[in-house]
Image 1 (spheres, rainbow, N blue to C red):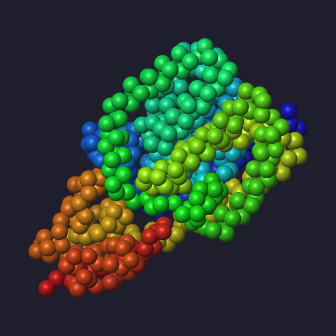
Image 2 (cartoon, rainbow, N blue to C red; image 1 turned 90 degrees about the vertical axis):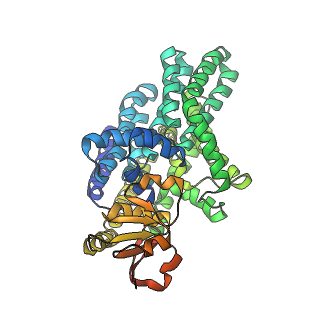
Image 3 (tube, rainbow, N blue to C red; image 1 turned 120 degrees about the vertical axis):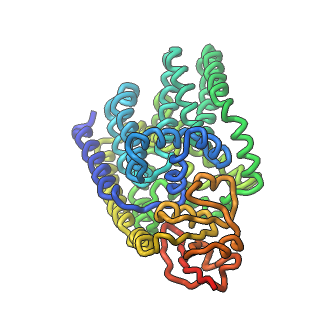
Length: 470
């Protein structure tokens, strides 16, 4: 359909993304949630199930990581490879399933968007579940489309199975597939009521498959309603939801530039939604956007009415679907419009790659490693907050004592033990104190703490002290 070879363009975008991944891959940058992953996957499958039941995420991602690490070894590099794999599977879905369903041009535009949009490279490099959730939600959407089109049992089974994988990976992926089921029901009632029974049976299968975890989810909801780290969203936070897909690692100016460069893409897509909204492909594209907006809307609504439970990165579970929706409508644009958009996307990809590489090579991570190497091997570390615990557990081989006893911190055992300040002061040996709490030294350590240095990682400053004993 297009005079230029969009296949070659897609290959260039994918290669730039993968080269950027390779340039950032070997750095030891890590943030708290990743340290939690690295600590938890060292436990048995039974322990992972019980520990995650006291946390705020379902267990499937940790099962996947542990299974692979038993073969590849327990390292941050292995965990990063396991976040790249779902990205590669997204691309594979693009050149197989999406190509068959929506055509070659949509397929390659999907590959380009997956490779170019700023949030993707960051998520590929994180030892977290968001890329897997994104993959499972996309496949849920594709099976939903095929189930309605063909009414084949295999497609309804695929819909149920992928929904379960998504639901066991992240709770906002669970919300996304629940919204998908609701939107499918609306489409069926308007267009093909004969499919209601298969839709219902598919939903029952998902519910039955989720029953083993449902009681854990209800318990977690009760805990979150009482105490959770997320704060109520402000107008600034809500604005960040809009910026997040264009977000370039902790850098405001590049993020704003990326947002401005991508505005024409959004304008072209909106124009083509208005012009091409009656076909079944267009309806599916609109549904993909509705899933994103409803996930954000439900998250904000619950945050205001019940308890804050939503942060910008949770919307990432819908990105695979959304990029497909964008590709469907972008394909309807003129050749000249697409060429201009591709140039802008290439600029954004290069900007993101440069920003990510600069960030990954930050000295702060090496400073923490140097501190660890300079500490006495028989020394112990005291931490007063969860972020310091995570960082200490990853960078230091020393014994760690945590002052706050919380069930979800069991992931860091047995390397970490809970102890009071009185118990620690009665122990022999040398101690270092690490805190991210604005230079606040807790317990009986305040008058014994000698400041050593501050190290900034992500949006936290870690204050390191030597504890002097009498």
